Length: 611
Ligand code: ADP
Ligand code: ZN
Image 1 (cartoon, rainbow, N blue to C red):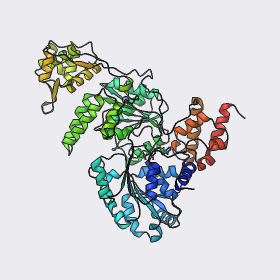
Image 2: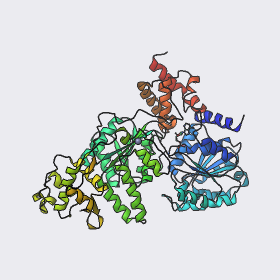
Image 3: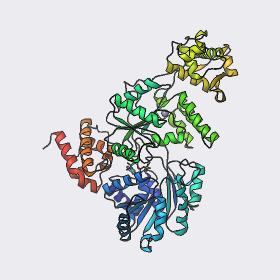
Image 4: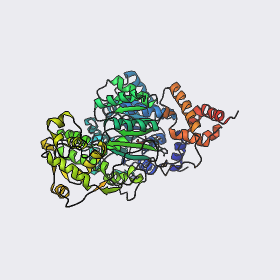
C-alpha cells in the first residue's frame, strides 16, 4: 500500500470521508517528508485534518497541536474521541494527577494527538524524557497569526515558540492560520525560525455562504427583518453579532419577547455564564446567540446556518472571519449584514481612539465600500484578499438582484437644499428629519420646521433617505466634517447638482422581501464534495435530527459531533437500512458506524414503514 492509499484508508476509517480536499494531501505529504509549512486556509477549510493525519499515521509517535483557546481544544478532543482517535489535552485546567497520567500515556505511545497551550508546552517539554520527545512527529501551531505583532490577534505567549525549531531541528513545524497578509505571513516564518517553510495557500472562497447586505434599516424595522429572517431559518443555529455588550442584551431580550429564544454573549459576563451559553449553543439547546466579537473565537460548530451582523464590522478581515463561522460543513449558509451610516460614525470613533488611526480608518472605509457597492460581493472580498476572482458569484444579493438605476437629481437637490438652508450645520440624521418633516424637539428648537425644504421629502421613507444620502456621500456630493460635529458640507460637485448644472444617478433602494425566499440561491455545495441528485426526505431529516439530539444528550457531546448536518442529509437521502449501507454514508467512520448504526437505521426503517 502506498503512503497515500494508507492515508486514504485512515480518512475513511476514522472520519468517514472519501477524499481529501484540495491541498490537504499535499500538506500532509510534505510533512511526512519532514518539511516545514505555513498553511493559509479559510475558516472551515479543513485545517485540522492536515495535522491530525500525520499524527495518526505515525507508528508510535504523536503530533503536538499548539492552540491558544481552551474551549476549542476540549471540543476538538471530544470530536476526535467520537471518531475513536486517541487524543489528549494538557493545559492549566488539568490537575497534577491528570498531567501525570497524560505523561504516562505519552511515554507508552498510546496517544496520537496532544493538544497543548503554548505556555504549558514550553514549561512541560523540558521535563519530558527522550522517550517522549523522540516520539514527537510534528509541531502544529494553530492560529499562527497570534505570533505576529502585525496580525490582528497578537499573543505574547506565542513568541517563545521560535525556540522549538532550534531545539528540535528535525521535527517538522506546521503553522496554520485563517488570516494572514503577506507581512504577517513572513513574520510567522521568521518568528518560528522556519525560513524554508513551504507555503500552502488555499482559495478563500466559501461558495456555500450566501452574502447579503441590507442598507439603511434601523430600529424596529431592522428588528422585524431579523425576526423574519430567523423564522425562515426555524430550528437552525445562528449567531447575531452586535456592536456593544448592551446591544447584545437588548437584541436577545427583544427577540425573546417576540418568541425567539435567544441569549446574549459578551466579555462582561462571568466565565460560568459564558460557558453555559456556549455549551447550550453547541448542544443545539439554544439556537440563537447575540454576541459581541468575543463569541465565536472558541466555537467550532459545523452546523451554524447563518451569521447576522446587526451592525457593520470594523474591517473586512473581521467580517470574513465572522461569517466564516457559518456553514463549515459545506452546506448552504447565509451571511446577512445590516448597514447604516450610523454604524460608520460609531466605528470611526473607535478607529480614532485606536492606536493605529490611519490604518483602522482605511480598513473601515474598505468595509463600508464593500457594504455599499453595486458589484458582486464575493468579487470584492476575494480581490481584497488578493485572490483573483473574475466572475459574478450568483450567490450574493447584488448578483441576485443587480441594482436598478434612476435619475436621482430631484431627490439630491432636495437634500442639498436642506443642507444649505441649515447653514451646513446639520448632521445626516437631522437632514433626514427635515426632509421627512419630523417635528421633534431638536428640529423645532433650531427653527428647522420653518425651512422651505421642511417635509418636502415625505414621499420617501426614512430608510430610502438613509440609503440615498449615503450614496450622495459616496459620490462626493457632500462631506462629513468630523471635526465639526459631523455636520454636512456641500462640495463643488454637489453645488453643480444643486444648481441643476449636472444630473445624478441613484441605485434604486430595494428593501428585501423576507416573506419570499427568492433571495436564496439554489443550494450550492462545494464542488469537490458533490451530493447525489436524489431528493432528501425532509421529514426523515427532522426525525434523524431528534435521534441525533437524544444520542448526543446521552453521550454528553454536542449533536454535530455525533454527526454533521451533512451526514444527516445524506442519510435522509440515501435512507440506509443496513449496517453495511450505513457505513458508506458521508462522515460515518468505523467507530461511529459501530456505535450508531442501530438507532439511525431503526428510525429510517420505521419512517419507511419497514419491519
Ligand atoms: P478549519 O479548522 O480550517 O476551520 P475544520 O478542520 O474544522 O476547518 O474543518 C471544517 C469541516 O470540514 C469539518 O466539519 C471537517 O470535518 C470537514 N472536513 C475537513 N476535511 C474534509 C474532507 N476531506 N472531506 C469532508 N469533510 C471534511
Ligand atoms: Zn455575487
